[in-house]
Length: 333
Image (tube, rainbow, N blue to C red; front, side, top):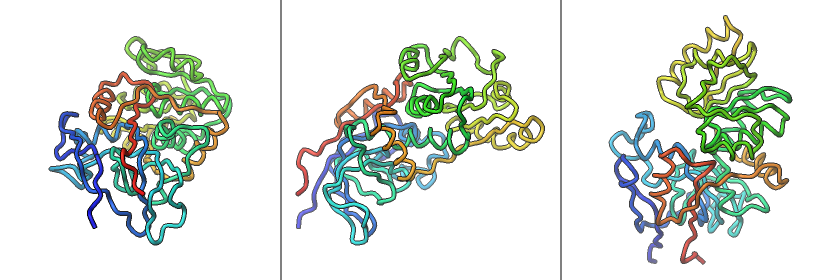
């Protein structure tokens, strides 16, 4: 029997988007507890950008000289084509979305295999492109605000790096809890941030949120470029700072300084370690189906232009999510 082929965005060396190639490779075969998915859409995350470049170097764990995963892409939406012998949650024909960062990546391809635990049934009323924009970014926002931040009604919340995927979901989630939200990002994203419900928008190039005298109950930091000692000035006593992403020196600084700041200033400084799971994806599925949140999609690209999608993402001007539309030209029977 001949091996089925598919198109995939492949890279064999770390670097800029120029190292990405659209190639024909073998369609993967699902293992015992896996399913095979025909990918209809996949979205770009900061992890894709970091893994592409191999920076910071911690991203090279398991593949120091060359990429461990030759096909990027974690957030996907598509249709189940086949199931492994012990897979029980889904059947062929089911439409799903999910985060593959815990089970091998591979979303920028026409087909991908994934463990069942990474997937959730598609939200009703949403397109594949909208669903693919949700998994990683939305779950990070949820875990940062609900689990680490203990978000409460009426709080003052600041989101640093609010204009990307995590930030746009975080604003919507915070406003569902009737909080006062300050969004920090580039000036060009102001109108979009206000449309999502942000009460205040700060241009980080013109105003330093750590030095203007205002304080917040919860600070969600998606970019992590500021010193923890600067950030704590903007945090109320008893408040919580949650670092989701950022430079390695800032992560280490936060990790080391957090116990002392908590003890002497009663301010909680913490780092979120992402835990992809279908239970948290289900929360966003329900909110999307109820019309209470909506993914923000800046640009759509085809698989043949996926390298350009990553280049645009790397420029940092994107609003919300960048999505790659992937639809197999020759669907498998």
